[in-house]
Length: 119
Image (cartoon, rainbow, N blue to C red; front, side):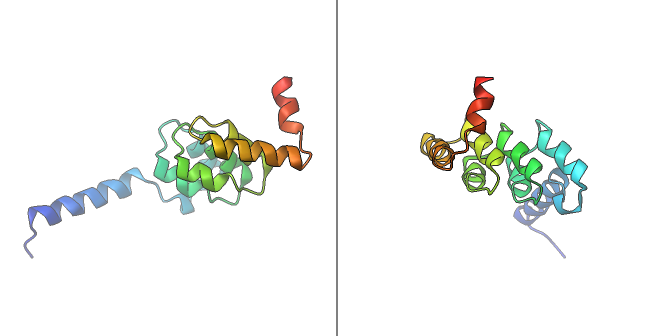
């Protein structure tokens, strides 16, 4: 079968993407934690890790400098306050999302994050 240059380019890009992006579903919890802490982890991989069942992994994603605004917006609704708090502190979080998270903490009487900042 003969391929056009465009088809070859598309195939090469697909293979490179698969090599660069690990299959997160096959990783152990420890490997996911290390990946979430790795400064070279891509925003795409962090997006996948943001859906992990482990709240510590999601919290690390919320802290990661490469985490996109879109992923942070999803994590802003996480059921664990520690994840939401890290989203509020993240420099890529929009001001409105950050304020909503802080207001939710105040309304819920959860002052622990504020105490942690003061200490």
